[in-house]
Image 1 (cartoon, rainbow, N blue to C red):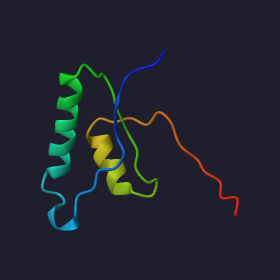
Image 2: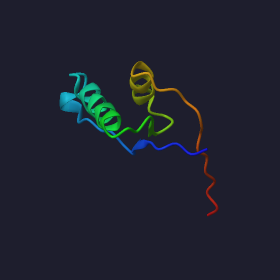
Image 3: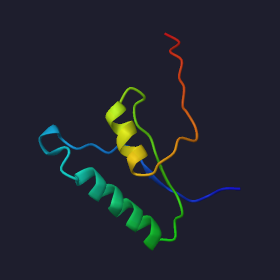
Image 4: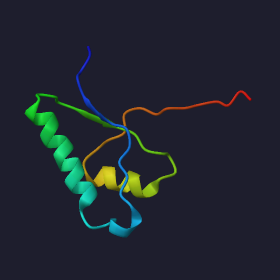
Length: 74
């Protein structure tokens, strides 16, 4: 069964204005957009070593449900 979703590829806030609520505002707008268009889910990703992003998204209510792996062959 497939589910339609909004995909957030990357969300970046420059250091000078971080921790001022802009990330939350942007994610609120993404949620608002999804709801207005009848889209029930938001998918996103972040770099595995970005602990700030992990905490931010957890605080926003996001839950992990899959992981991506890679292997360099060169």
